View 1 (tube, rainbow, N blue to C red):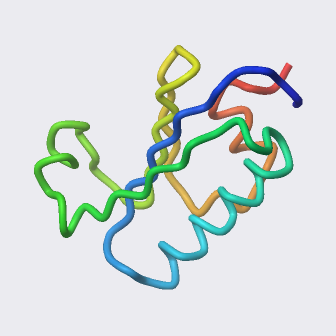
View 2: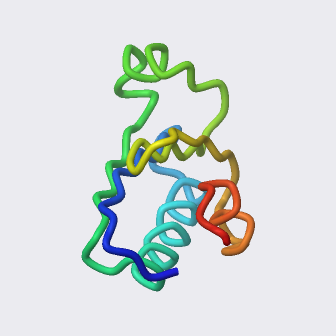
Length: 93
């Protein structure tokens, strides 16, 4: 899905674990494939920033919040299935 939209994605992880690294790598791969140069990926460690996790009501990690473009969407998992990630972000036609 190629688009001129800008994407703001926030990935909430719990520490520097292999699961967190896998989720971030999978998400970066999807973003580079689908909207290269049109996204900002912010990674937030809930162990270091519990206040942000509480504010965003993060109950599991890794959790992805797509803040832009609207509507806001949330996905939990390792993001290994590209179609599920895009569908969860509301980006599949």
